[in-house]
Amino acid sequence: MKKNIVLFVLFVLPIVAYLFFASGVNSFTKLPTITPKIADFGNWKSLKGEKVTLNNKITILGFSGSEILKNRGNFFNLNEKIYQRYNGFKDLQFVVVCPLGTENDAEKIEASLGAFTDVSGWHFVFASPQEIKTFYNQLHLKGKLDQNLGTSNVYIVDKERNLRGRKGVSKDKKDEYKEGYDTFHPSELSNEMLDDFKIILYEYRAALKKNHNATKEL
Image (cartoon, rainbow, N blue to C red; front, side, top):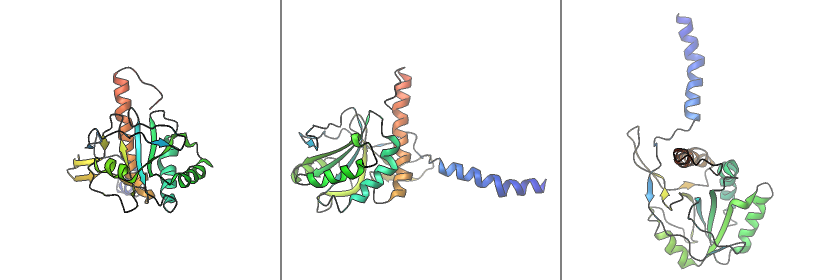
């Protein structure tokens, strides 16, 4: 009997523990809203000259700043950890707000990503410095843009233009607040962001199933 218990502790428990932590179960069953009903983009154009909207899309929102090439590693981290995994969902888009004048640099980033990724879900949009400041301020976030109008954080915005994250007391009675996910740290994307993103997808899939309108879009 004691031998069986020892074997269980040595071999079974570590496997169970690994599966538990590897599953990345978030302590929230529904991802809280940080800022409700944020404004849509202005008449800002993408590299293709198209207008991009936040309406009816799950959006991963970023702000490149003027030093977009210097921070290009952040885009590759996001592309590898999140985008490539979920690329193909019609209701998902990755949008990066860039200052006017950085179009050539953004084209280089997109071309680099396109060498090994279908970049149809990536959208770099361009606005004036004042427009970017105004848009960011209405997000009502604790974090601020740097002097170049950029941040390494990205944000999850749902189809109703609610900016989502972690806020309040979780199921395990811990106070949590998280408004963005740092693309400089791949581990944060693989853990916290992926965990929270899965909850958003589950919410919409559950709603579609409830309405008997399930599609392959999510």
